[in-house]
Length: 336
Image 1 (cartoon, one colour):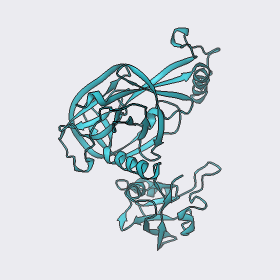
Image 2 (spheres, helix red, strand yellow):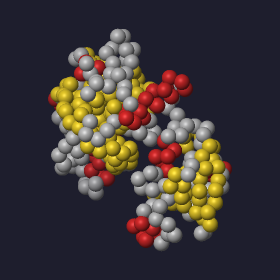
Image 3 (tube, rainbow, N blue to C red):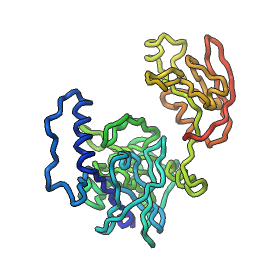
Image 4 (cartoon, rainbow, N blue to C red):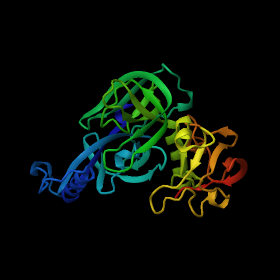
């Protein structure tokens, strides 16, 4: 049974911080905020906290280890707690995956029911699946059925709080209903094993939802067990993945590859100083054509290739610089 192992994540924020963040959001949108911004008193508890959202998660170990989405616990000014069997538990955030929308929490319980983890590399189009979660943060253990509608999808996702959008890649697409509040709940195969973590829905469309492949979370759990943190390989490049439209726009010699370029921020170097790429001599303006023999395209980005690597692995890059191809090897460091 999956439902008993699914929990709710409650998100609360102090009244003063909430009113401040609402005001900042008005200014970000170019609108003068009303004065003063006030939250109704009936929404404020005795500690001056206001519930501002919620998500889902599920136990993966009997001693209280929980998987959820990173975007569910992304706001540094909020407090997070776990609701299970109508009891509220303080939770510890053990790790946030810097690449995938995965986070790991821990609460102090014993003999918690768990969801067995499957193998997301073996799922097939048309396979039946079930999404479990706490829809809208109110309807606990909501179950919806569907099929796998697509594989290896990528989307640009926005979290519940202001901040940069995150590009999520390699997603599972399903037509099982995924609603706000379902984020972090399991997407399970017919055998009851989790093959994904519900993460996003396309608003304005029907039956288009996405889940993070469970194998990403399994690697994170292995890192936590072995290193007490999530370790991700780091090459040290900021780049734009090219296609033919971008080739024409920037008048570039090729319509594929990773174009290394500077971002407008003061620390927006295309090649991060002291990084593996810097030590290997990669320069701004280079185009990384291939990594370990794999051509870099919109469908297979440099990030996609590196995600399958481990810290310390050697990778070979093929660079295009001023019309000449250059080969270089890079030892992947750990992302800080």
